[in-house]
Image (cartoon, rainbow, N blue to C red):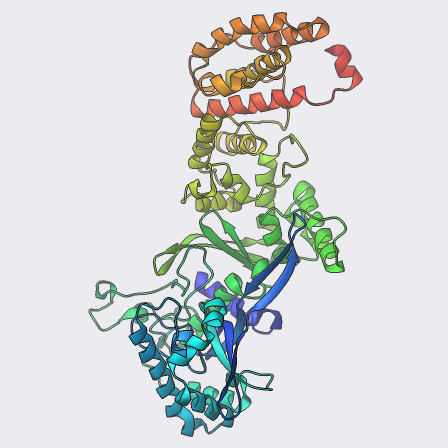
Amino acid sequence: MILQALNDLYERLADDASYELPRPGYSTQKVSFCVVLKPDGTLVDIQDARITRNETTKAGKEKTTQFARPVLCFGQSKPSGSGLNPCLLWDNSSYMLGYKKDDEKPARTAEACDEYRKKHVGLEKELNVSEFSTVCRFLESWSPAKALEYKTKLDDFAATGFGVFQIQGATNYVHQMPAIKAWWAKQQDTETPDLIAQCLVTGDMLPIAQTHQPAIKGVNGAQSSGALLISFNMTAVDSYGRDKQQGYNAPVSQTAVFNYANALNTMLGGPQSHRHRVIIGDATTVFWTEKATEAESLFADFLQGNEPEEGGESSQDQALSTRLKMFMEILRQGGGSELTKLGDDPQTKFFILGLSPNASRLSVRFWHVATLGQMVDKLKAHYDALRLRRSSDKDPEFPAVWQILRQTGRESKDIPPLLSGPLMRSILTGSRYPQGLFNAVLNRIRADHDITFLRVCIFKAFLIRNHQLDIPMSLDTTRTEPAYLLGRLFAALEKTQEDALPGINATIRDRFYSAASATPGTVFPRLLRTYQHWLSKLEGGYKVNRERMVQQIMSGMNDMPSHLQLEGQGLFAIGYYHQRQDFFTKKDKTETTQA
């Protein structure tokens, strides 16, 4: 199902020039340097081919970034392994120039450069193209020792990425010359397949790929050279003894492999990847729709928690902000059926795929297929469950998934690695939230005693979906659950302490919150005795109103529970947050008179 969807995606994107999808026989490589030659093969210079981008950060600072230029090159991704495998008219600096930064095996680097020269000189007569002959003359005259003259440059921009050749004064690279491209296309047509069988993706009788190349690049934490989604590398997994090896165990045609691998690579690292790729926990997540939609172009910004910006610098920024606002309004009010306001068909299929690294392979964290309408409905249900009265304008109305996961660890690296997949699955399918999410947030509160907006949102959503509790956005004075009342009572006692002792460094939350929420029967009697001392320091109406509030809260409890279960501790936190927010919420005159 995943391969079929990606194969269809390639067909959809092939005609869209903005995605720069490679054609059969080509792959997109990250080019960081260019070897410029005179027509006689003399070296002119080794130039930086990277792209420089100037941008303004959210903090208003100017930032300059450089990244390798994506270029269509002959063949698939650079083969891995210890053997010598020179590419045609592109490669890394070891092969092209015989130089490698901090080289521990200079003899092998020199051997690779020699193999690269032999490959090109051996093809010169067959191609019979002047630009290719120029490259051959350069390779024949070049010595790895000469690379030391360009060491500073090579260490700067050629240490990573690949290089290409260019003739001085030409606008194209050598491998982009029409005559060379025509020769390359002819070579693809003359290759004899080893096996023809029924493709599991298309159902057609086609040449089968023995290995699934190009490798998938752009998955966070995976090997920089790429990893495989499907691979067989042990005889133990071969079918019928040794009759079927490697990719022949699960026959997928060369065309389907090329399509799905390049479509996925484009989603992960192509020029439009910012519209299709986000990092959620340890999973690199990509998503797309079966046809171009507005929701597809907005989903990445939304999942990353990007807010609409007023007064964008360009009309494009303003248009994006307008569409984001409309999408958020759909989530607030209408749901999936309102997608027509964006010009989208709610019945359009939507795909989302989560990948994480696993040595030289990739693991599928989650895979979900739905319609756009269903996806928006599930998102709306998720955010409705999370919705809580915000403590400030900085609290997000639509918390991003990474912001939710961030509440589970002291630092980003402490987030449980297996949590992102189940959380995304629960959001997209409307199923129960993972228990591990609730437990991890509870443990963080026990450690730092910080009951924040997002943490309480998580508790609220968990109890609504997993325990079918009806929990409002703000204070509910009619609730009678002991855990909720105890949370309110703890907030009232803390506020009394703060009013009685202004500027106090540590409140009862810092000293007693964990114990009070887990074993209230042993903590609250002591707090209530101390509360009388704090209350005596208040004056006039403040004292009367606070005593009335505490009595009203306690009147709802028949007895003091000795301990609270985990879910009760979550409800305790919600009651505490609701009561604290109510203290700092401006009351109207009617409420003040009644108080």
